[in-house]
Image (cartoon, rainbow, N blue to C red; front, side):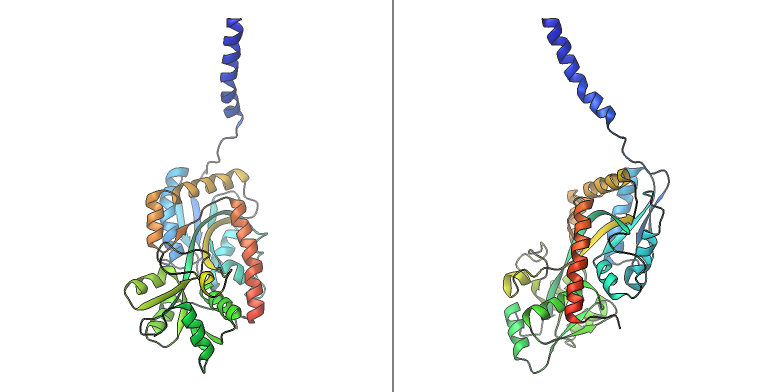
Length: 324
């Protein structure tokens, strides 16, 4: 009896080993990898990519080369990702303009959902409704009331047509009914410079570029556009808390590959990026850049892309936005 019990125990102990042997080996790249950034060097996307690349290289045992392919509001670089060999050795960043381009660019060269493989939603960067420090406006309600009473439309700057800083303003205008005029710039820097000088009334500025001016006292924050308060400005309410319940928009950053990537490569890249960005030191470094870690599964990121494709399309149609 004792011998049978011992044998049964040994048999049970062996099961986990058998289970482990039956599991497929994790995907391992066989050559250097390309991490495409569809924007110029030194921007937020490029900074985040260069923070990730060395740690990914260490984890995967192959160099990860950051390749900047800027132009056409991110389309050139994103198309390079989409057209790459789908073997897991080429992937890259997209941001929320990815879905806007699909509605705004005539003869868009690929489908923003069907032609990509979502890997991981990396970070969110909220926009911040800011006014010049010399402005008498101190709250979102005051901003809305001033807009209703003003004899002219309230002007809001953006870093360009089709960006999240543009859509934030259009969503606010549509939701409140306040007369507002969009003033697009070629980048966030020139827009913020004109805002600080008082040449425009407000901006829904990207947190990365706006926070330094807020901290220096040149701009006054009224609200954040994300669905919850940001860790950078915990005392500043969301737009949804104040005048527009349900209001939510942020600039998201995530990694995609071409359609048809091996499932093993998708899962390995997803797991490694999640592990890297959730480390306390990396999370703190990203927060310094104005980025808040999200992470999650490929399916969650894919659902976000599809959801925002529809949501931004509704805003574009309602506001009559074109690239002309």
